[in-house]
Image (cartoon, rainbow, N blue to C red; front, top):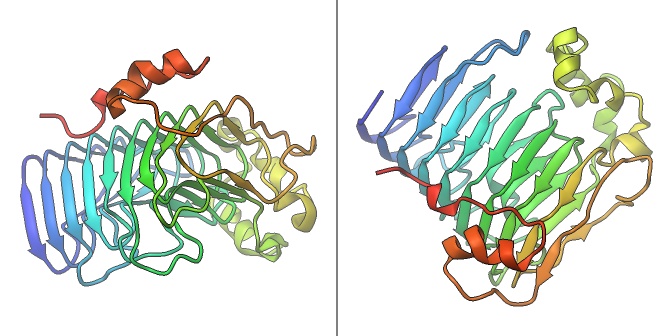
Length: 329
């Protein structure tokens, strides 16, 4: 589907399930439910679908069914979401499940407008939802009219999500950039977080999983694992730590993130990070190093800050290709 305009529908704008499906250059607005729901691939063999949603403008969605009807919903294996502009929704922009999806070069703003305990990009409660990548996106101007109990975030890996890599994203004027609620093999590296908003309390939350009884035999996470061939050679090669998760005590170890790397980020004119477990316990193999906190935002445009000012100012900070983010003309 290319260069289509879809508006004023009571349900989803587009629903696709298969392989090599593409939604390109479309504008979607004024939907009762979500924008694009796309799925495909084979989870048993981790064969990618090669589905793609790119260069689309999706806005003012979920106007009847306000929550859990995102601009883009991903499931299956190997979908790509790139160079889209997403804004103006009550709840999430992208919800994903499954494996090895890429979400990159998207601009997302003015979402989660009536929500709490929500985020622009969200997944949770599934160890098998692994291998997903969120790189080089621009999250900005995210604030909610709701009372803030948990808060809203740019990226939210909830309830012991499986491995996810989040690198070189920009979070500007967002209440919080990230919440990692449990989960293992998480990477949050080389990101730029700037300018808090009035409801901001923390820039990053790195927390232990609060519902450890779900990790007991027969619980939510074990049932999720048993729904896929996670013990096969294919899965063990793709996610080498996965078999190790169940060897840890649920109450004292499995609920604490392992093998996580929160390093090399820059936080400017925002709130501190919040960690509620002994992240540096050597049993957990976590890293948090070379993060730079700046009390004020250096002068310069966001593009200049990302591409040359911060790399020159902060040793080891890699340039973020900000000018490549967003829709292409």
